[in-house]
Image 1: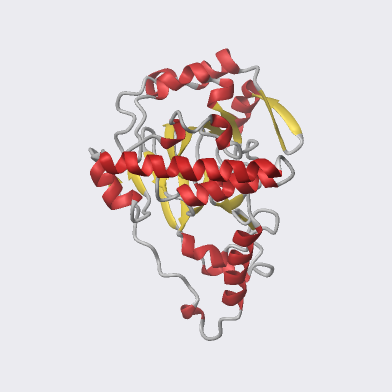
Image 2: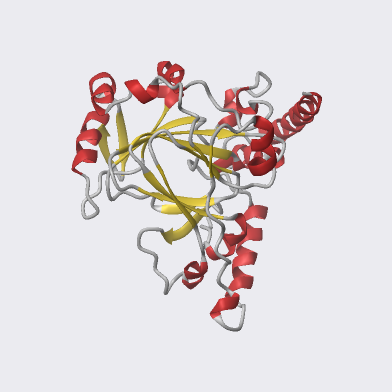
Length: 319
C-alpha cells in the first residue's frame, strides 16, 4: 500500500525514460493507446497451486469471492461497532484532525460534491491488533507467508502497512494512481459496501507521469486529470471492476491502481512477498534506509534480506 517515498534514482530514471520515449512517439493516436486489458476474473475454491499458476506467477489480478466465508468480521464489523469501541482514534487528513467517530458521520453524509476525507486508513497492528482474529483465516497468496516469517522482523516492512483498514464514503477516490511501496503484492477485501477499482498494468507506467519525488505515484489527479499537462494519461486503459462485500481483489506488484467509492464502505488490505517480488522489495528497503534514515544500515539490510530470500526460495522448492 502507498505510504512513503521509497524510490531509488535508478527506478525513477527508468520510468521517466519510458515516459519521455512515449512523448516522442509519432503517428496516429491508435498506435499510442494501450490495448484494452481483459476483464478481471472472479474465482472461488482456488487451490494454492492454481492461484500461483494462473495469477501470481503470470502477474494477473483476480477477484476471489469466498475468502471471507468464515471471517467473524463479516458479522461483527458494523459502523456502530467502530464508533462505539474505537471512535476516539484520531487521524489527520489534509491538515485537519478527525476522530473515527467524526469520520463515520461524515462518511454517511458523503456525496460526490462533498466527499468525506479520504483515505481514512488505519494500521490494524497499531490501532486494532485484537481484530486480526476477526479477519482470519488469512488467505496466503504464495507457498509461504514471507511477510510474517520469523526471519523477517517487522521493521523490514517500514515504508508500508502490512494490515490496514480503509474507511470511505460516497464520492471519495484515491487522489493519485500509484503502485504500492516496497513492491508488494496486495489484496483488498470489502468488509462493508463496495468499491470500484481501476487497475493499470505495469507497462502503462509510460502514461502515468511518475512524480520526481516518488516514481511509484503519478502526478495526475485521478479524479480530475489535467490532460493539457499530462496528455499521455489519456492513452492509459484500466481494467475496471467493482468489488462487493465479502469479495477480495488481488493485484500483483507494479500494477498502478486507484479507487472510487459509491457508498459507505470499509475495506481491509494486506500485502504479500514471494520470490517474484523479493528482489524489488529488497531494493526498496535499501532505498528507504538510504534516504536520510541510516545509510550504512541499507547495505547491511540488503545483504541480510538477499540471504533470507535464498533460504526462503529453497524452503519453497522443497514444499
